[in-house]
Image 1 (cartoon, helix red, strand yellow):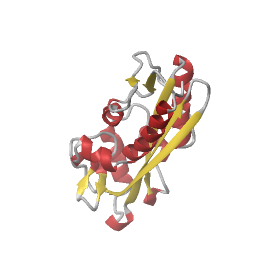
Image 2 (cartoon, rainbow, N blue to C red; image 1 turned 120 degrees about the horizontal axis):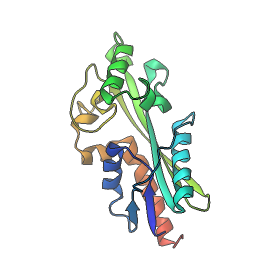
Image 3 (tube, rainbow, N blue to C red; image 1 turned 180 degrees about the vertical axis):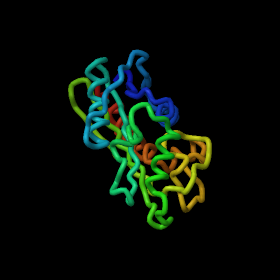
Image 4 (cartoon, rainbow, N blue to C red; image 1 turned 135 degrees about the vertical axis):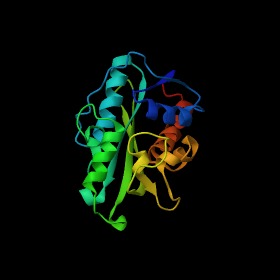
Length: 199
């Protein structure tokens, strides 16, 4: 394994992923000409697999992709795999957050439980595939707080910390987040593969 491609064009995800992957004994590369890969999967896992496979096939290299979503219990698990498209094409993070808060208007705090779910997919150029999943439990806050992170972070409250995801540093978030948990599993696998001399 000469290099590991990161199949994402999301700058927020990239920042968090690169921080976790920086100690891997392999070159981590983001292809400058990575095309937009349409997320047509019905689940978070399917979308992660689509992106990893597409990148591995296009560049003939090992590729890592991640997909994540917010599951709100009071909304029957929505927006889930549709998190990025929740407020329609081209909507901003602020618009998605505002829509979610409107949908939860009047729902009491104890019923605003939610979780972030992430799946990391690793695809080898020969077609082999592995997936790793992580979750982070929390609640939906009544209003956005914090300036860090991206996506739904400003309204995802961590009750045991009394802060939203957007009020954490990148290092704090990576320690407890869904993405951090899934990536640490993937990193363990990659270290074994590299140590075993997997091409």
